[in-house]
Amino acid sequence: MEERTFSDISFRQYLNEDKLMGSRCKKCGALYTPPRSLCIKCYGSEMEWVKMKGTGRLAAFTCITVGPKLMIDEGFNRTNPYCVGVVELDEGTRVDARIEGVDARNPETIKVGMPLHVDYLHREEGANLTTFLAFKPV
Amino acid sequence: MKKQKKLSRGVAVVGAGMSNFGMFKNKDSKDLFVDAFNEMISSVDKGVDPNEIEALYLGNFTNDFFVHQGHWGPIISDLVGIAPKPSTRTEGACASSALAFREGVFAIASGFYDMVLVGGVEEMSKCTTEEVAEGLALGTYPYEGNVGFTFPGVFGVLATAYFAKYGASHEDLMNITIKSHETAPLNPKAQIKLTIRDIMRNKMVKAEKQGKPVPQWEDEKAFLRDPAANPVVAWPMKLFDCCPISDGASCMLLVAEDIARNFTDDPLYVKGIGQGSGRGLHAAGDLTSMEATKNAAHEAYNMSGLTPADIQFSEVHDCFSMAELLHIEDLGFFKPGEGYKAIAEGLTKRDGSKPINTSGGLKCKGHPVGATGVGQLIEVWKQLRNEAGKRQIPNKDLRIGAAHNLGGTGGTCTFTILERR
Image (cartoon, rainbow over all chains, first blue to last red; front, side):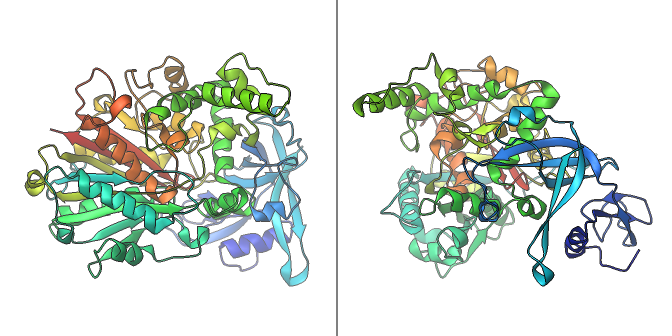
């Protein structure tokens, strides 16, 4: 895999390219999402990129009616809530993500443990391109 | 086994003061801190010359964001006549002033100072609810904020994880809300001095006056189930699961133990003091527990030689109802998955075996975030010194009380145990 620093900046660049990437410690094998450049298990600093399968299950979630500006700009408000959650990836690590394709107005229908697949929500273009990491039901 | 943690010399609390907590149009951070300071000075039983204060440790989360003014240490220090002596601002999100308390304790324990002022201040009410949510979200982990998490959202997540693991439900959280509202009217400093029944009655009277259909609820839980009365903020956290937006200030006077009785015959001693750091939802081991709280508790129990059973009562950081449930388990008061049952049995009420948040908690006392940590310790001060008035814990010889303060999404937690000898 190409040379990129094991950083949040690289993590976000990969999301722009529709890739969910983690880092693995070459010394002890510990896996991290988002990536770390320093292994906090063995303090090894030799890492390699790992492309995550992008599948997992919903570990926990919430449906938010009063969000920050970032989400108000996305069109969400008190009558149009959004769902975010913690996703446990099949590889065993976790990520925080938007949960799409669920009914945030009826949270009772959203179940902890439900299987999910990664999705990438791109915003803006060119140099301004940013991406929300998202997951949706399989 | 690692050696027992200890202070190089003992530290005592000899004075405490708090402003009213609430939303104040005509007072800002500075005015509120002066209120707290004046009450602190008058609380010192044998009097104190403020010129003896050698340094200030001040907790403030983000007045930078809320009122566009940073660098509050020297501003507050000058206001109460401590400048040019040192002032240090501590920031640990909503645990900012518990960190100030801790730094003040260490400064005295080191032998460098004999008397320091510790406290906190926050001014939030000039912002809209959305702005406050955004300001507080500065204290989340970047990966959380980037996808739109808010503070209530994080506790919503923890609630769904807890419910799925232990089979509890939002009905169980209602017991926490009802309890906080029961004791708050007995606290003259509380922001919300109304029981849930008072609020129900007010809404009925208001509807009648306006000629609208008068709502009817069978009991408090029926009210809390009604989405019109208790709308979702961040599922399953609803309006009445959340603390209010508050302004306020708090402070305490710390002195070396060997001079404490120059100021009062009834000082409180720092028996245990602990702190921990969390790692965000994506890296947390268990979404039904906070490792920062566990580490803080471990340090404080280690230093004090006490166990959870020895803590006679505690304030815990109930920014959201779900938070109170997690903390009483993480602090060891109840077993994991048992806390909600203990609450339902009334064990955490003021007359229960383990009173929690006799002040009304952040839920009703208010939560001016930077002032909260020391504000919680002031409730411990009042209860231990038998000065809590109508909300005094009944029928107990109180010797050991504690306060747990949380910052961010569990990023910073403290646990402080005070002793009356």
